[in-house]
Image (cartoon, rainbow, N blue to C red; front, side, top):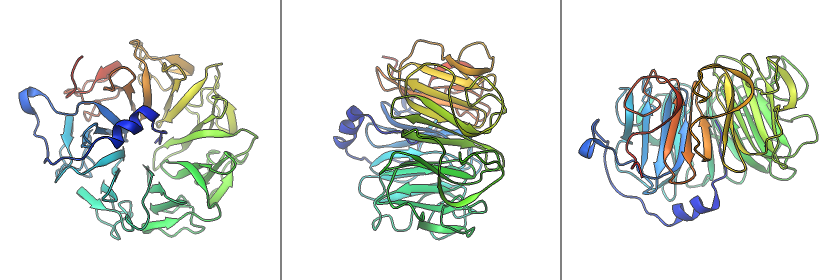
Length: 394
């Protein structure tokens, strides 16, 4: 799940708004619409999606078996529903089988699957409503990401949740129910959490570091089948702007990153061509994505990946039916997403992708939709981007 750097114009917008009250939206909303409105933060989870709007309100839609929509129920939704309880001043959200959001003044909150301590509230129970992460005021996080576990960035990176593969980076295999600092690397940039692997950009050197499961080369060190409970440096002399880890919690993972010269590199599992190097061979060191495209961001799902070029054009590669091209074909190299939209950012779930369009900051999604994760009032899969319900058409 990718943690993008928020563009400067979005940062200014976020700083200029205040939170407002409100309870859960009911399906059908006022005048048949929802008040999702302008989107400032967007995240696709496994089979769900969450967004923060320009009023700092948080909405989610899609699969809800663990309460990961945070609306106080476990009912799937095909349109956005508001978080249960008062809407506090959210600035960022990250979605999965559990989800977490950062607020301006009230710390970090998580909800959904919590049996492994993923919610960070000193408990091992799931919750369909937000609970505050322990230490939220002591450690004011600027970035949070979720996968099989959770990690957040303050003065260093803290992780919590399951740790059977060393994915918390704590130097052991002990699961944690509260945020615990990652060892050995005191300064980090962006962090990303996959199913059983986590990676970050080193804030001092801009090199990439990874920890956790390395069975299929996810750690990028040149080895297969080797895990690490501490951060290890990814091979190569590339320096990076950002990094993203995909993959299922019970399966292999894939990692992609954007270098400081805007080239995309990927490594790890490649069974569906999600490394974008023209093959389906797994890789234990970074390989360039097979085009001359210059990317500003990248995101990885379970079997596909997507990126946004410097001019906002979306490209995807990997498994059939998930690439947004309108054809339903898969591809071993990047292919352009249909529809002519330009995007601020993209975010990939397990089998779907969503993005914020560059012109009006509206959310669009495509791919699998069996749980309503595209948010378009249906459960029909889409081969091209569709606009999420609750947003003006102009």
